[in-house]
Length: 92
Image 1 (cartoon, rainbow, N blue to C red):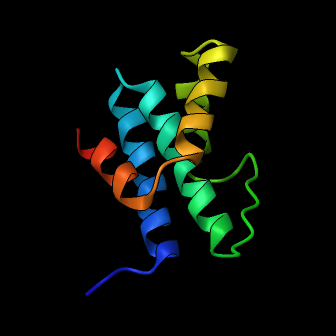
Image 2 (image 1 turned 90 degrees about the vertical axis):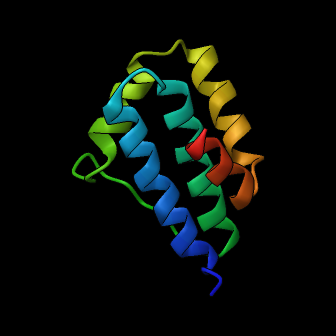
């Protein structure tokens, strides 16, 4: 059974949270979060995060470990990934 894109994107966001909280791969966490956001956007899902969003502290921690250039590059890379590519990155 194939998963619909929003389900996959939500899973990617959770994987980004897990990668971030595990430490050592903040750039991957930011890349996966950007991929999830892009996939949701492509499906027409409006994503509005607040400071109270459950994954926000984990993503903030990942971003704080990176320079602004690294964050921009990770987000750009994430937005260009397909769902399959993002899942492969999460598994690597």
